[in-house]
Amino acid sequence: MSRLSTEQRQDMIIDEAINIIHNGGYQSLSIRELAKQVRISEPAIYRHFLNKEDIILGILNRMVDFDHLLEREIMKQKTAQDKIRHFILFHFDFLEKKKEMTSVLFAEDMFDQSDILRQKLMFIIQKRKNLLSSILQESSQKGEVADVNHKDLLSLILGLIRMIVLEWRLSNFSFSLSERGKSIVKMLDKLIFMK
Amino acid sequence: MSRLSTEQRQDMIIDEAINIIHNGGYQSLSIRELAKQVRISEPAIYRHFLNKEDIILGILNRMVDFDHLLEREIMKQKTAQDKIRHFILFHFDFLEKKKEMTSVLFAEDMFDQSDILRQKLMFIIQKRKNLLSSILQESSQKGEVADVNHKDLLSLILGLIRMIVLEWRLSNFSFSLSERGKSIVKMLDKLIFMK
DNA sequence: AATAAATTAGTTAACACTCGCTAACAAAAA
DNA sequence: TTTTTGTTAGCGAGTGTTAACTAATTTATT
Image (cartoon, rainbow over all chains, first blue to last red; front, side, top):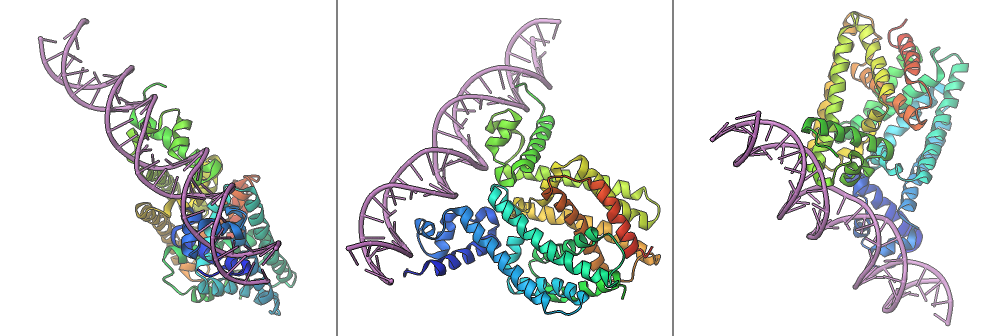
């Protein structure tokens, strides 16, 4: 195998790590298997990452990248209502193109053994909640949204997105996620926007 | 340690297995640790279970037990609307009393390595969905519920329950789950029952 | 009721295997 | 010539599981 720059190798390693988790769960992510897939030796992995935890940190950064895309996409929308719609639809459109990322979303066992990873995950989740929360508030001030507890509505939307993605995974990705997204948005239009 | 009947030991072993998963995640469930907690030797575990998979099957049966309780509780209710309310509240009341079971609910990695376990889990999930789905249909026929896609509404309710429990876990069980449940039910009354 | 036989629930020791990670060294690139 | 990316070999620790044996309990027979 030829020599590559650290940046290139790091990307390859994280790509493969995500693939391995996608195919066999986090338990099947070993340095041995990872090295095999990347076609380098195990110690070579350690040239580019401090340890296994560091690799998972790299995976988490892919989530951060997604959040940046998400935020940029949402800010394109004018009305608060459209922002919420696109918050949902963008999730589904992205995951439909990158199935493997759904595994990362649900591999909660990755964080059981490490405080650093757990903290980083909590931070990401909190940031995403804040984003949706601020839009919800904006929409609420304009009187567009149903008069219900804010926190509960936040959990409803996030829980709904998560559940649809879980169903999609368990069905072996057998339906169109973005089509389902449209149906979901329609329902929310009726229920929370009273349209 | 004294001798016990298989039934008693099996219960002890499954209890401890759930506790271990609760405290350190599924990764920390080893036969070694399990035997240590039950205060018997490792091979003694194999007197009561075929293998590790068999132990997890035992954990899954605790979920089945819960479903039986749930179904019995729901059937006590007269109106379809009350059945849905209690479907939610019973989940929260039960989990508040048995925190450890939340870990089982979210330890999806348990099922990554075994087709048998995955199938059993799918079966349990499907049964629970069917239960809620039939009540929803009953409620819908009476014209109590908002006119939205059935499947989506099902995902909304199940996703909401799941998300609240996840938030409770991530907050280290720092709020009253049943109190939150009441707030959730209120919201759903407004949104889907149009009250 | 006492005792022998069979069954069950436990033990210690060890198996083959996988894990994350490192020391020591080689070769390519800067 | 120095730095960077790779290699082979191997470490200590942990994994699920089994073989071989022992002690307690249950059952059957005298």
